[in-house]
Amino acid sequence: MNSKSVMRGMIGFYIFLFFFYLFGPLIVMSITAFNTPSYPQAYPFEGFTLDWFVKLWNHRAMMDGLKNSVIIGLGVVSLAVPIGLSAAIIMNQIYHRARGLYYLVTISPLLTPGVIIGISTVIFWKDMLGLTDFTKATFYKGIILTIFGQASFISAYCLLIFMARLTRFDRSQEEAALDLGASYPQVFWHILLPFLKPAVVSAIVIGFLSSFENYNTTTFAILADKTLVTVLAGEVRQGTNPALSALAVIIIGISLGGAIIYEILKRREQQKADLAQREAVLAERQEAVA
Image (cartoon, rainbow, N blue to C red; front, side):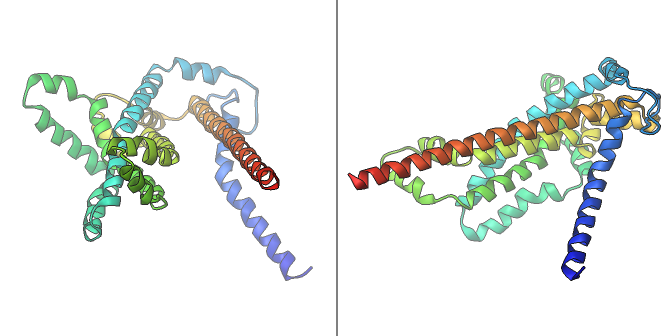
């Protein structure tokens, strides 16, 4: 035994502790979803059952909260992604001395507590939409207010994602297209947007997940409506049951399935790109020989 083997053993031990701390609660919760006791219990395992998934499906408040969470998430994505993209494009084009102030203004919602955002959203839109009874009856609703409140800071996340991608963009491509007669909309749709496609997908996923799990802003802006997170918070206060574990198993399964599908598609695209590159190199060599 030498110092290198001891170091490798210590590193392996800490890695094991890290993954055990990370995945241990998820494994225990997954076991409780299939155990028969009415209280979440992983050991002893008294019997296998799927009743908690049935009870979860029949839990009307939770299903309504899930539906509202999906609607809010889609609404937030439809607002936050275009706003973040527009802000990132402006950031990339304005005079460099003004970028510091502009960056501070656009990122400030991330520094604001969610409680303040939720309360201010309700107060602001109550005064704005209270001008007429029609607008208040149409827009002053918990789901719409929650979309406005969440989009105000999730758009800042999208801004950071687009900025990270735009730092690698070659502006000479836009200038060349404009010199060749392309209009600004054509440059955006055919040059800039295809380059930003990975960032757009990332912003959509992160925006939806950030909206789906948000609690602080949602609990104040949702008014009388409920989301999945607020329903879960109320259920936990009254005492948890394995139906919540069943919900966790479903969410974990969807997350793992999505990650696996994404990885498979990404590897297939990489294989196609590598094949196309090899074919191009082979064609160049044949032309050189000829």
